[in-house]
Image 1 (cartoon, rainbow, N blue to C red):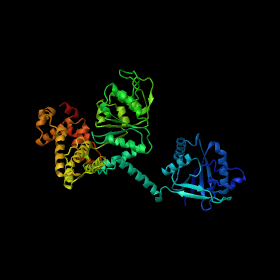
Image 2: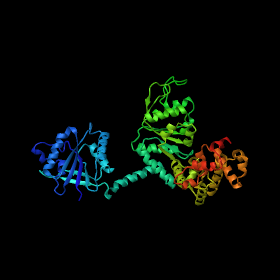
Image 3: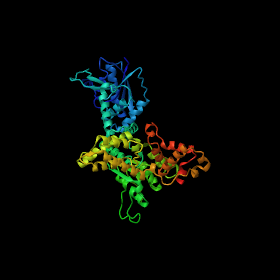
Image 4: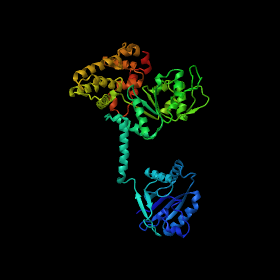
Length: 534
């Protein structure tokens, strides 16, 4: 059996005592050396400087009852033993500097003595394996007599009997993930992995989060659910404030976000707090953050880093502590490279970036989302509507096909289900109604879908040069023309890539649509900037 090494705090009350009467009192630290069935080889006894005399007495008493036990007195400089941050830091630093030899010794962390803060810190250090070994919990005997050691219980957090605790944590995490997905049993592996990570970040971090994805992919909805999850766990007391930066223009942009002082500009009839101050102790969701002007970007960077900023026309800074969640359907990396977005701001909000796939990239998730929308309709309208079997099969067959562009993503799907449920007679959606809806969707996407846009033929002679264009096979020419049409309708290289690689991207573990598209264009000697010009 390996020698036992005990690590524990001196109990300033429980271990105290002077004169012969102290032996008639149960003292937790001394009791560890009084058990006949176990011998403590060494004890690392932590104490604060002002209790050095008591520590010396306890050391001497342990030597009396157990000469085999070596006691090392470890002074800790603590100004406030009830300050969690200070106590944990001091203990952590000591544990990191200590030489643990788990091959030759076994370690017990005594959690009976010390302040509640110290006990919690000792538990956390053991649970995280910074201090290896088991927890030792001592308790007094039922009848106190001299020499009675009481009871010592060992708690090994690695044992399977404590798996129930881990299972409860796991269940809580699953509930949180389901909450973020509104209980929708999504099947897309990449999306589910993404939501799993977002859940962990949402409950553990207050750092900025950037949600990237096409319009209608659910960025705003997910941002609100993240806030509600933190709120349910008492991590936020302030409100959820949402603003679409694309609606902010001119002088009003800074005023809306940062507030202004009365008389700072024409029309400023009174003070205005601004949305950043409104979001204090809550979450601020800035959708389409790439639309912010350069001045607002600079002011936002300061507000994120320092939690302070100047309202428009103010001489004094104000404070606001909020968590920023940003959304964009643009490739901010390209905007940074082209000077439209501040590199330092992008670096600050890019710690946690999540690319939400569009609905067309998650065909397997269309069915559970349709069921979810039908359930919402039933709850809101007190009227249950269902598909006929043939109608359901026909709708899903089209909805999951490459023909279904879902340009508006979940907004398109929600509008489609709303039309079907509204027009359904007798609570049933028949095949004829589905066929009419499919025709409507085709018409909508033909008018607005970038893949179907035919506004102006692509002049490859002008884009490539007559000699290079003439060398193309008809197959390559038709493919390149189709790609250029999509690119001209897309706002960014990433947006075009998401549309062009909508099926294959779902099977990739690492998705970089922009890079794939850039390489394809480069093969034909085309740069992204030239497509827009052509």
